[in-house]
Length: 450
Image (tube, rainbow, N blue to C red; front, side):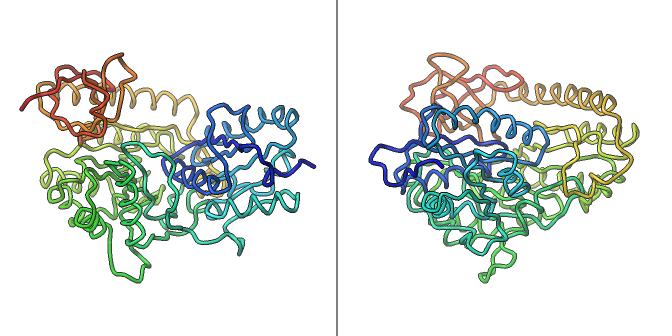
C-alpha cells in the first residue's frame, strides 16, 4: 500500500492531462482549483508529479484509445514512486467505472462526470482509508453539480464558463446523455458571479459552455432562457466579448438570432452542428430537423446579422448512408458555404442506438467520403479567408504568435486567427487590424490607425 501524502511537509505537485472537449478543459480547471486548496501546485513534467489527474472523453473512439494508451504508460511511474496518486475523471471514467480499476490496478481513484466537484473530498477518503474506489454520479456522496468559484487557476485572456451540463436530445450516435446525464442548468446568479471573478483576474472574453446551450434555463426556478442569460451578462458585467458552444439547430430561436445583431459583446460567430445533409440520415440520427429547415434558419440568421461566421460538425459514413445521401451533404456545404467544418468518420460508441444498426458503411468508402468533404471545405474556407483581405477587423490580442517571432496573435469577432506585428504588452486589448494576407488556417494583418 502506498503512503498517504496529505500529511507530508513537502510541496505537492499536480499534473493534469485533459482529453477531448472544452467542457473537459473547464472541469480540469475546477479540479486544479479544488486541489490547490489541498496544497497541490501544477507542474508541466509528469514525472515530477505527486498526483496525476486524467480528464477523459469518450465522444469518439480515438479519444478513448488515447486514454487507455496513456494509462498504460503510467505503470512505470507508479512502480518507481508507489506514493504517486493517479486519478481518472470525465466521460470514460463515468462509462467504465470499476472496470478501469480492475484493468489498471495502479489506479487510485475513478471519478464520474458529476462527482468532479467532490474530487478533493474523495481524494482525502482514499488517503485516509488506503482503499481505491470508483465514484460515479449515481452515488449519493458526489456533492452538487455546480459549485461557486472561490480559487481560480491563473486564467488567460479568454476563459470558459459552464452554464449547463447534460443533454436530453439522445441523438442516435451520441454517448453524452449516458455519461453526462440529463440537462441541468446553472443558476444565472452563479454564472454572473463567476464572470465577474474572471474579469478581476484579467479575463476579457468568456466562452459559455454546454452540450446544448440553446436549451439553457429549462428546470430553473427563475424563468430565463439562453437569450435572456446573454442579455443579463451584457447588462450586468463588463466582459468585452462573449462566445458560446454548442448550439442545437432545432432550438435556435429568433430571439437568440436577434442577440447577434443587438448585443455588441456577443461575437459574430455561431457553431451550429448540422451533422448531415440528407433528411433520411438526419432522421436516423434523431436530429429532429430537416436539411431544409436548417437552410432556412441559416438564411434568416444571415439576414439578421450579415457579418455572422458559421461553423459546423459533419459525420460521414453514418450507418445506412448511401452515395446519394453523401451527395446531399456535399450539396448542403456548397449551399451554406461554412466558414469552417469539423468533420469526422462515424465510429460506434457504446450505449448508443446507432451502435446496434446493422447497415454499417464500408470503412474505405467512409474514408474516401471524408477526404472528399474535407478537401472541398478546405477550398471554401480558403476562399472565405481570402475575401477578408483588405477588411478592417477588431482583434482581441491573446499573446505572442507561435507562427512568427516578433508577432502577436488574436481573433476577430468571427473567430478567425490573425497574426501581426505588435508588442506583447498589447495582450488583452482589442485593436483595429487591417487584413493584408490570408491562408487556410489564419490571416495576416497590420495594426491600423483608423
